[in-house]
Amino acid sequence: IGLIKAVDSYKSGKGVRLATYASRCIDNELLMTFRSAKKQAKEISLSEPINGEDGEGNTLQLLDLLETNDEDVAERLEFEENARKIYQYLETVLTKRERDIIRMRYGLPTHHRSQERTEITQREIAKKYGISRSYVSRIEKRALEKLRQAYENDKSKT
Image (cartoon, rainbow, N blue to C red; front, side, top):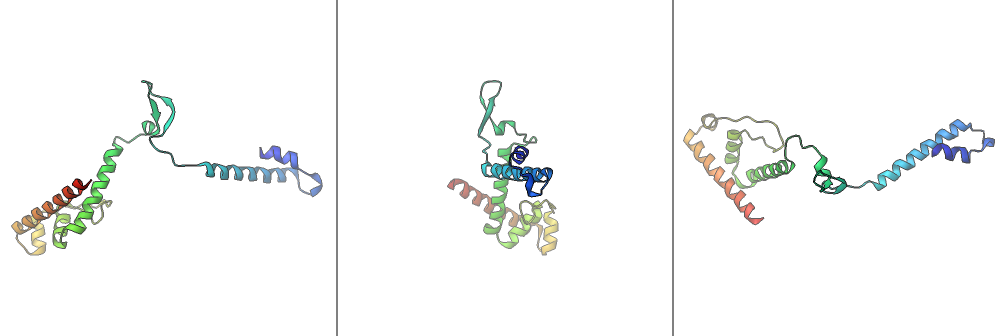
């Protein structure tokens, strides 16, 4: 289209070669096309119907065509939400000592998206804090109960 417009509008008396002028017209046409496409771009819902049907005559959705890498998307989203909530509960429900013991015991990093995972035994935690292993066990049990109650309370609200 840019080349056609260049040939139609080229004036030889301006001192510019046709090839140079055509190149500029083509560049401008491409730029206008990209701008127009950008304006028309919109978000697409994964459940938006697309042209076509499956073997049973059902309308296909974009989600039907996407691979999930052997992992259910809904389960992954639920897991992420639960992990976020657990880290929120760790910060808001537990004391610092309880939080530290739970993190060490279960190898939880300070942030739910971190990959760092190192679990240590109750005996190692007891040695680190200078307390008995049975006391670490009681703190762990109490902290887990607090987390469970917070989760149940939150779940009953929804």
